[in-house]
Length: 417
Ligand SMILES: *Cc1c(COP(=O)(O)O)cnc(C)c1O
Image 1 (tube, rainbow, N blue to C red):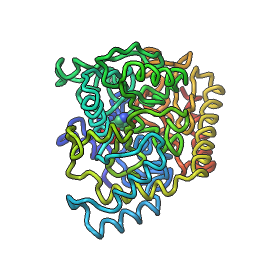
Image 2: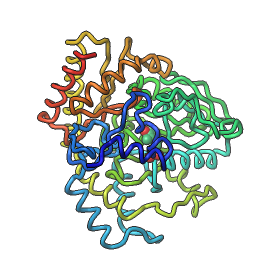
Image 3: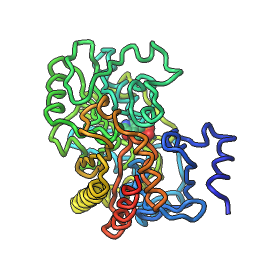
Image 4: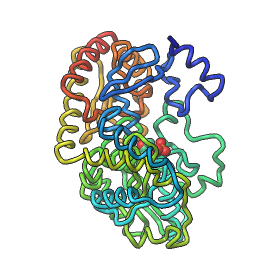
């Protein structure tokens, strides 16, 4: 049997840090990452055959559980007919129709291959449409790793203690303005757009003040800037039409990813017709992709959306509430000071008090305590993200039976903290 340690040693020889995305390296919690051999429903098995209840769920790309039969079948059927053509396909049309039907503010949508591409493209569209340079983002919101959005970006950067990234020039972030979450900034007429996670889920879970989101809409309208909701996590997860559907606020542009690929590589951005008409070949804003609208990704996306009906969102909410209750009672019984915020179907853990409302507060979380919680759970067969700034992704497969495994592990792990 190949062990996790052997795989990690080999990986570090040929992949920086042994991983293809930094948080996976366990840098902030310590120890050796488990190398996943397979997953099914709410569980994953590592290379050594150890089984975990998986609350990582590909950081939100999986919502119906691993290897869901309907998604597997859709991908297999699509693969038989070829995996990429460089010509349009019917599935792209159907997926775009589905997205526009679900997301109230999207009249047109362009498919790309990742969330990063979606946010980079949406910003370019906003600048192209308005002819203005400035982009306003919120500290602790993550929008992928495009240069101009890598300032105060939460997520893996927060776990590594980095404010931004080396290799990003002053010029690249010259027109990026970073402001605190949950406070409406005063904009000016140089502002092309404001990009926001409508529910912040990359600095732990920080639910928005609803007046903040309404205030952003009004402030953007006042100066003629576009409002971009980055729904790469929240889209199709917190409600059928994402956070905008939940809160009843229409952004001008929306970025999506994760859930809509059913675990395959996809992203999308969409919005009002008059805005989206600036995108090439209709307009002057160039954006392209060899694998955009990929047959396997669109097949998986359509299969997952098909599972996400009203009953599915009820189930997701129930699972999120149950998970939160389990964690709250485990913390309380062990006397651990913690908050377990829930936003619709997302669950966060904050080790500290009071509950944060912005990045400054969020960074006060006790990272050492999180590392103890993480290993306490992992040793007892429950995998959560190896970083204090991520959230938990209970999905359709996290049934009461699965969550009872979490309950046992959580009460033992908290007691051991
Ligand atoms: C994950 C994420 C992204 C980036 O998506 P990738 O597919 O990892 O490039 C962008 N925005 C938010 C809110 C995310 O959570």
